[in-house]
Image 1: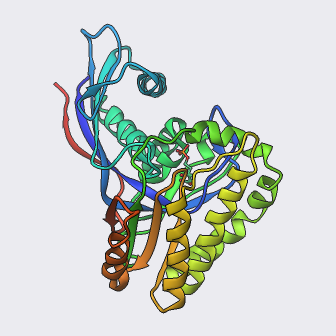
Image 2: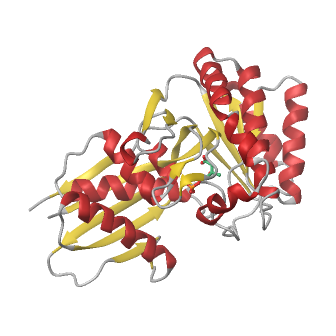
Length: 327
Ligand code: PMV
């Protein structure tokens, strides 16, 4: 048993995952697609060691003994069972972006934990299997394992609900310009949100149309058709938030600045900029635009007093092992 460090980028979904057909296995109600966010990553070190008497977890230099540790231990249990490991582990993770603010920190975290945990045990798992294991920690983490543009399949069996790349980071030169309007931890996390998705009357309709929207979105990406892309991406994000807002109890992730920026983005597009918005389970607005328009979009966002910060991410790589040492 040894030590390994892995890095995984966050990702932004263009066709969203919301709600599970099986909560325990995180088998999603519908397939989804996303782009990895280059430069916005989690870096995680896992050390399996004979002498440890319990798992422990440090996040951004601070010891986590609460809910974060419980989730990490559950994921280490999955790795222990699959790889026949008897030891406990020391896990240290760092994000270079704000945690819990709608920038999919759990996706990067569980992708990096999965890849580092397997590498530290000297295991050579296929990318496909790594995506299914990452999925058990956080559904969207499955999409942070493969490179570039990624599809995650919905299925009834654990092995069949995996993610794979349909485009490298060079497939299309688009950029995610993220308008950060709040750095607070979200009040209701996505695990609880998935579990209440079916309490919305709108979820059945959202899920029924997801495959067709996914087909349109993928085609728009592969054809570099920004108008078609913007249309389906904004529609899919609106549908997911409509489900959230009509769940019982309702989930409102938008803040007033969120709505203001969505409105500006639609106006900028009408004026000729190739930009559209999408939102995850948080108030920050992901403004997806073609590379040539990224500077003006970020300049306009920065000019707004409501915007605390602007992060810029091009299409990114899949999860990577940075170092491994097995004595
Ligand atoms: O992977 P989770 O459980 O954090 O869920 C992520 C859900 C959304 O970010 C809202 C949508 C998505 O597909 O990433």
